[in-house]
Length: 171
Image 1 (cartoon, one colour):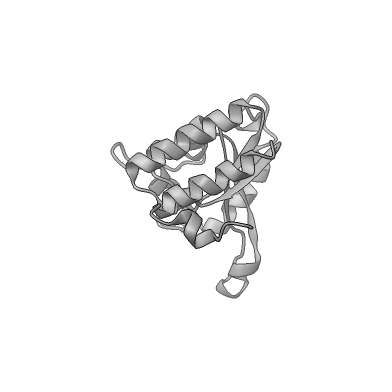
Image 2 (cartoon, one colour; image 1 turned 45 degrees about the vertical axis):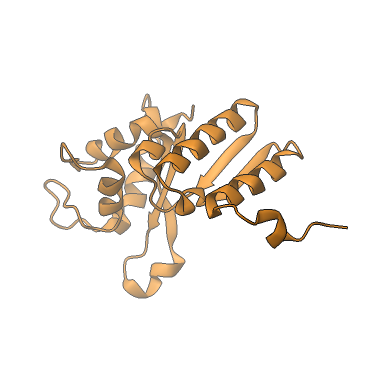
């Protein structure tokens, strides 16, 4: 007789439940895991536990893809590669229908990429907040009073074709 879900999870936190679910998926030895926002239910210690667990899973040869809206910087810098998406719509009415790539590449090159686009990350600002602010149009681009976030997808299409850039090669 199958164990009822509520009884099986009784006494576990939401983060522990998520970790158990991920563990159950691993029993099938998947080659790819798609995990949606695992950090939304975590405190700082649990985020570190999840991050370490995902790294260990990846070492087994399983590709781990994590979808998260705004990870803590300590979590973000632990990712090998990052895909950042943004809106490519020029007007508000199209906003929900026009999602495009803004950056794909090694996580440790993300800030360098945006700095090459003439955005300056303030010394003590959280880099994740910095990128989110760029995507949302809250940071001005040097010498470009006409900048709007929808231009980021155009910049990406141009930049990805430049030779010898770290963001042209995934690790």
